[in-house]
Each structure stands twice: as structure tokens, then as C-alpha cells.
Image 1 (cartoon, rainbow, N blue to C red):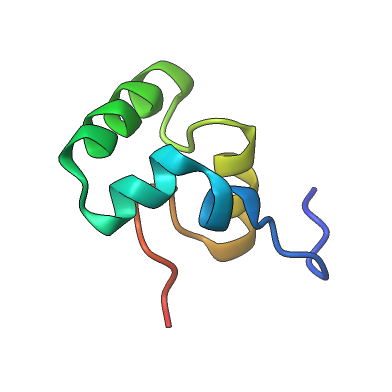
Image 2: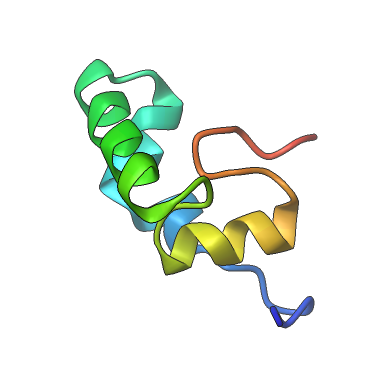
Length: 64
């Protein structure tokens, strides 16, 4: 279970693939799609933590 007090920031701020894909970079979108197909819809462990905390998958922006 994710600690709701501490946001998982790696996928959001530091992961070059996820951050680049959400910014619209085609290369990173392709790499992220491959990762999501291999690892599942939530992606890597950091992506899974982000999905649990924010409720959106790594390829989607955080809702306002």
C-alpha cells in the first residue's frame, strides 16, 4: 500500500522516459509504450506507485 502522505515523485519528476513521453516526445512515447506492454498497464514499480497515489497511469498527466 502506498503511503498517502508521501507522493511518489520519481515517475513524475525524474524518470526521463515517463516525463519525456508526457511532454510529447515521440521517441519517449514509443519507449514508454514498449515498457507498458511488457510491464503491464501501470508500468514499472514507480509507475505503479504513481497510479495508486494519483489514480492515473504513467502515460497520463495528473488531474488538476
